[in-house]
Each structure stands twice: as structure tokens, then as C-alpha cells.
Image (cartoon, rainbow, N blue to C red; front, top):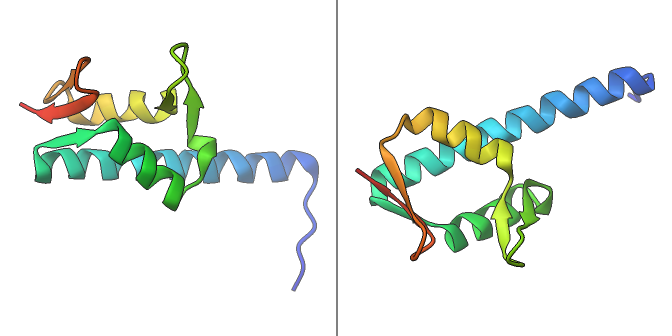
Length: 95
């Protein structure tokens, strides 16, 4: 069975899928930092690339791969201040 969508419908479907993936990634990050106690950015980046693709990453001003801002924003909202970012070690730690 084939589906034919208008551009508007296809864009809405794409946005819904993207929002769902952002939610899944943020939930994984939260679970990981809760269970392990820390979550290193390089581990999160590798997991995201392997499971969701590079569209959920960007290259920051220092030339490093970073996690999509929407993902980090949702993750921050979900942990409610219970995970702290360590700038020197590039990881989150459960507090």
C-alpha cells in the first residue's frame, strides 16, 4: 500500500516524528544519568548517532559535536536541576 501526502501533511508528519525522537533521546539521557550516575557527552553522542542519526547533533563553536539544543532543553526540563553539567569533564552527573 502506498501513501500520497501533500507537502503540508508530510511536513507535519516529519515534525511529529522529530519531536518523538527528541523525547526518546531525552528520556534515554535521563535514565542513563540516573542509573549510572554520570553521562559523558561522547557516550551520548555515540548512542544518538547509532540509534537516531546525526540530525540530532550539531557542531558547536569549538568544533565539537554537540547534542541538539531541543534535546538538551527537554533533558534539562525532565531532570529539573537534578543533573549537573561538568564543563571540564564534558559530562552530566546526578546530584
